[in-house]
Image (cartoon, rainbow, N blue to C red; front, side):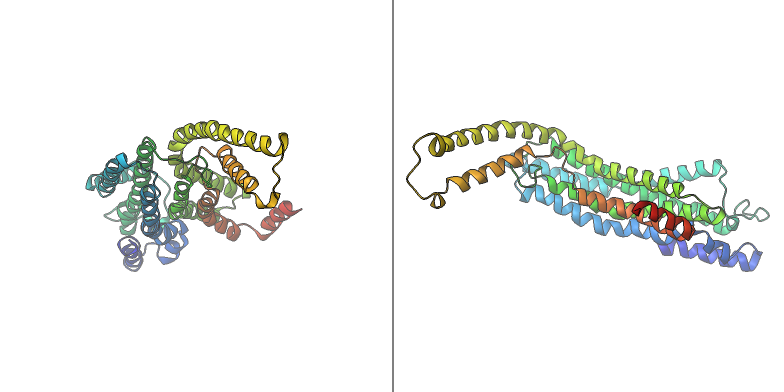
Length: 349
């Protein structure tokens, strides 16, 4: 992707600088937004597939290996996986993504955005853009947009898969130690999208770096950009987990009644034996009643503490950190040292 997008762009900038006297390498490399998108965001969006897919595949396999899919739903689940793979590799999806990308580029051109000087050549036959400007407009930008749309498509397919699975008669266990009836592993999927969050953070950070090069930006600007991106990434990547709210809530209600009644009856028998009636003439430490009751109550406590959304906090924090890190780096390198020092002092004192 770098060879298809950035290298020809670099060559065209060099050529137009030498042959036409247009702005050359210095303004090109000073355009941090282009460098961040082409050299960091695009490769991360490509490599993210190799990071994300094995994790999502392992989670899909866990539905079967963990006994969550009922035997009569095995065929439906395998058909669902096969259809998801077909849709992900569909050439129609790729064609729609390309068409949407170029439509967005046309809208952007129609809006007459402000572009760097090395994009323009109003006197040449390719006016108003230079050869490098046209390459950036027709290749580099659509390439990034196509990759982003591809990840939105994959996220939609992941949500479709989970939504369909949530309608199965899942073999959930309310007393499961993960306190999500055995579904907490699905929450780990959020961390699989960390490369996408990082790529989006790089895109935003590059734009902020360009703005910081033209004018001094306040700390609130970086804070708002980081907060908005964090909220967007976490909500979009965590939203598919909401499809399990209904089945988890149903099993939680069933669990608190069944486990609660069972624990109450066992507790009553324990009290009748040890507290209300004639106590057995046996050494207490040699009897299993106490440990068995403790183990039972621990299981019942898991039921009452069960969550209806299988969110993993560590995975969510990892995703958020990956998205915010590029913006934090730009803020630390762009803000005056006195501003950063005062901000840290206000947090600590």
